[in-house]
Amino acid sequence: MARVYNFSAGPAVLPEEVLKEAAAEMLDYQGSGQSVMEMSHRSKVFDKIIKDAEQDLRDLLNIPDNYKVLFLQGGAHLQFAMIPMNLMKNKVADYIVTGQWAKRAFKEAQKFGDAKCIASSEDKTFSYIPDCSDLLIDENADYVYICENNTIYGTKFKTLPNTKGKDLVADVSSCFLSEPMDVSKYAVIYGGAQKNIGPAGVVIVIIREDLITEDVLPGTPTMLQYKTHADNDSLYNTPPCYGIYICGKVFKWLKKQGGLEVMKERNEKKAAILYDFLDQSKLFKGTVEKNSRSLMNVPFVTGDADLDAKFIKEATEAGFVNLKGHRSVGGMRASIYNAMPIEGVEKLVAFMKKFEEENA
Image 1 (tube, rainbow, N blue to C red):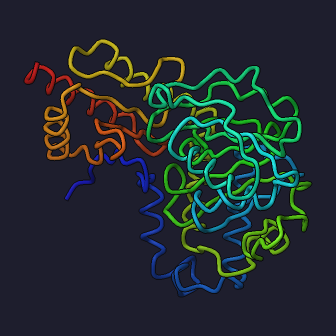
Image 2 (cartoon, helix red, strand yellow):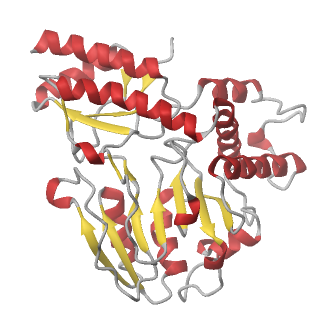
Image 3 (cartoon, rainbow, N blue to C red):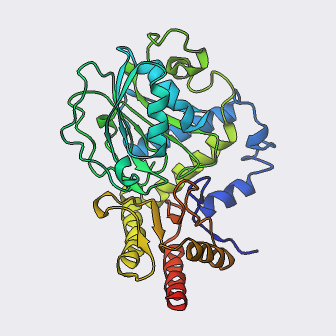
């Protein structure tokens, strides 16, 4: 069977080149006589895999030397708790709630201290990013938290909030490595790999070194302390070895493409093809305010639930899969991550035009 165009929000499409390389190395990784799946995480071979992956990620993002890169488990959801456990020294934190995952992170933080919601876009079903240029930030806040790209609702911060000198923590799961970013503007950046980088099971944390201390909330388990993992180069326990290996291959693929500037150009071009069509379509319409649109996740609707269902069914039969919107919002969503080729978006738009003609 031919490969489909996979518009899933995650686990998501991976570069074909990476999958082919991994397939070729499945039984014998570079003459080691074994698969990376079977390899000891303490072996010299795996040590090189994880160190190369870290270095390639540092190169791609120009990560400053005073930041640690950690390859962890538990997905982005575990970070909802790890962040307050490790960073909430004053037991105060400010959250900007722009979607489902930011809302969950905020609720989790409330278990550990005085977490406040200082801005939200829930009043319009999270269809925009609120103005964050002059927020009422608590002078005792340990950090300000955002989810930079909202997978479900298709919104993205175009300008980082003015944190008034407070540390910024960002969940970048669904926009990770889609464009360059200035790491020094953040205290912590983290993201699950399964959207734009690799298979599910790896979460990458980039954290400023001065925040990695033993001064954590009382009762914080050893495994949930950043210091545990930083001191052991992400090898305190068995890490998700195979997932890290694939992430490393994706980093190399990104470098080969020309880095994040090139990816940003490509992603803008892909998104424009879809948004331009939605803006002139008489049947489909985007659900996000124009100045808040994500390059990665594009939600849209026809306005008729039955017609939406018909579109999803026919699109799936035509080889455009996983276009169903998140169960909490319905409609459709095309996730067009780095590995989605431009022709995938062009062909989807051609299919949408045909569907519109037949169902107008």
